Length: 363
Image (cartoon, rainbow, N blue to C red):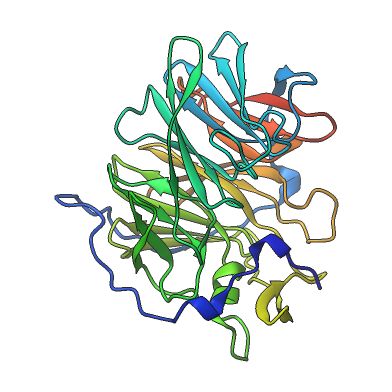
């Protein structure tokens, strides 16, 4: 059995409570429900996307999350030396390395997620440090990023994939001792409620809430034009779609229809989720456009090499229908759609750290 020690949750500090679904925003139109969609395919029938190296070199350590901000590309780097890379898009000019390991202003212990700024999306961005439980905002000048301010989140929550929904609310799946699917935090980083249904227990025994929430580790993407939250599960091959109040719009299941597999272990007095040789990785990342949902999929078992990377792209429409699926030429950690919508950019760790440009075939 294995577990991530940095995700140990001090559940004794938290009491279980039921989250009351409330609207995240006002005056919003709910997407149309589509129920449950299932799909499958044979991997040997998939076309492989053409991939070319957009940027490589010793500057990159372990590139991960990607975000376009105006005419800039921001890249998070888990090696933290530096923690953030800033590029000019589409020229590929390397502009700046930002942040080193540490706990002071502008320093990082991890780079878990890059977030678009809700107020000035073309001139600012946020970095979420899961280990330090801190959000850092940067302002962009013509050629550099400048530290603006920081928010320290409430303790007792490990956010998987936070996103700003409106100017003052953050939404994320999380390890938490609360019922509900998604945590909602205010602009000061404090939990104010949970929304959505609590994930189903796949075992025939009691599972503590923090362990159950960890078993449904997921990536989240917010699509503001549709007022929709898309949750792509990491340990089970399903994608959940909610409106901003947490009401279920639909669920996509496939291509292999496997549940999360895990054991409950106790470490230093805390219950934790432990992976087994039968644990599988499903959706690694998800992004959205007003027309489509793009999900990065693995399907590999936990012990397999690079199982936490994506090997396939699944493209869905907003009715939950699989539109296209492709194989990737290299294992990929994170994806982002280029501003012109013609390609996906992916972060790659093996065989060498690089950013890859994957051209999307014209429909």
